[in-house]
Image (cartoon, rainbow, N blue to C red):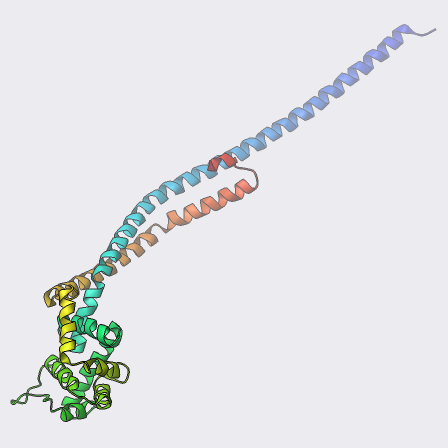
Length: 288
């Protein structure tokens, strides 16, 4: 006969053991949950620290970018104004090199551009060459010495002093314009102004000196000629802007170097943030 009491004890013991197993599993699950919660807390702390570091970098960069933006704005304005006077400065300096007035240079640029198709650069080069050869001729040598002798153009006055180079240039134009033989005119012009522009200048002068004078006057009538005084002021302004440009460049470089930590900090911060985002450690709506 079945011992009911013994069966009851066995059933009860199995239930107790099952309950103990359940409690053990619950304990292990609870421990894992605590560990997961701790890891989550640690990760949250690391993310918060990363965000705090990023905020500090952004604040530092804000100040740095303010200084850099101001420097860039001033630099852009300086470049704009400098470009406005650069052409005037070039006219003045070129006129000094060629030994002519700024007004005459502008007139000749336009006149020969219309009559001979020369560019400003080509005419400038021919005038520089003329002035250099004039100096050599005054010393008794050079390629243009024979030109002045052939055309009876005096290089010095009766007291032995050198004549003004612009006066001699204008006399040369008159003499060349009066030569009917185109080949001879071209040869003499080439000796005085060089092989590049000389023949074209000679061809333009073949139309007569009045044609050159009319073209020069047209340049004035059209408002293409700045006065010598205006050009001189432009040269002075260009010199001042050159000083300002150098000063601004130095200050800009200084601003970059002095704020390098903030700039590099921002770069590092973004790099770390992107690395964290790629691992899923940072919420994507950070960028939203």
